[in-house]
Image (cartoon, helix red, strand yellow):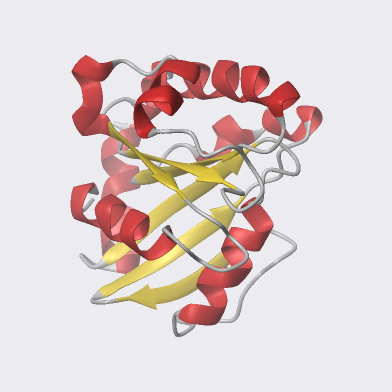
Length: 181
């Protein structure tokens, strides 16, 4: 019943073209840089609340409530409090830091298995392609141990958050797969 009420309230307050996206990833992966780039490229729909990590901007016909959540170990514990009502996930991986790729993989796998996120589209942003090895999508899929049989649930884009390369295409993929509430 709580889920039904939550969806009703969400639809009542935000309308059918409103989307809620969580931006997750380890500390230093480039989430904030990605958020800053998107905020600068798309018109703002509301004043940002950076202390809450919430930004609203318009992409095509959609208003996106974009939550940039901190990625340090202590903050990752609280991510789950933001899952309900979310319609899409952007998971950012720092491809230039080989030490963190294993922790990113474990974190991503945990998110993909979470019941509250089941069925949501995941955009995996392989960030910092400008300073990292040029991995193929096949190599990235293997490194992150993504299930190829569930390919419709996730997409990998190689990107550079400072220049925005790859971000628009990835965001449009995510929006096309996010169901209205």
